[in-house]
Length: 203
Image (cartoon, rainbow, N blue to C red; front, side, top):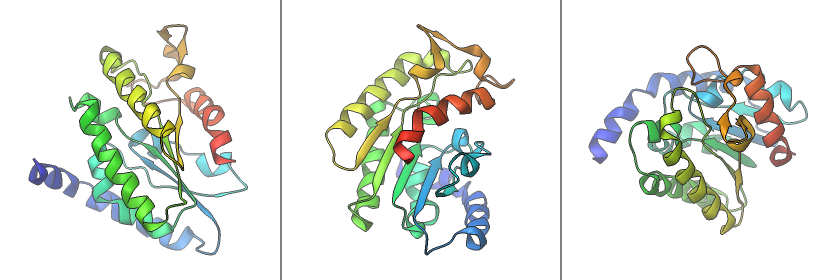
């Protein structure tokens, strides 16, 4: 299984290299850094830095990634920037790929352990998985994963859970106006809700 995972993560080498090359010139090592990382919902957040002008924000999201891919590329995407805070969005593609919440949480634990072994005071915000039109049939699994992430975060120092699931619903139904044509990724209205849900954790 590990061999298969490693092979899959090789697919992201070029994208990760491209991200690190971009920040080689943009990143100011003398300033406090906040890293947002994870799958395409992070990667496609185009105005992330503009949303938080008083902070140095690095967006190291890489599309199609799962939690294990982040673990493999953690040095390049997170640790090299010595961040004060890290926001992580993974689990969405894992659930779609039929991984169990328990498996996903185990990888999250490895990620958090690695970050805290470098700096135990780094604040890590686990962004809940989001609902979407394309994957609404998996909503039960997404909810189970979110419950586990929240419970885990509540028990650990410097670990936080940010809920973006609830804000994307109208009552118990999905707010379908928040998505682009593919039914999976968000339009600016969706990102506005994310901004509102996450800004207190940034500040």
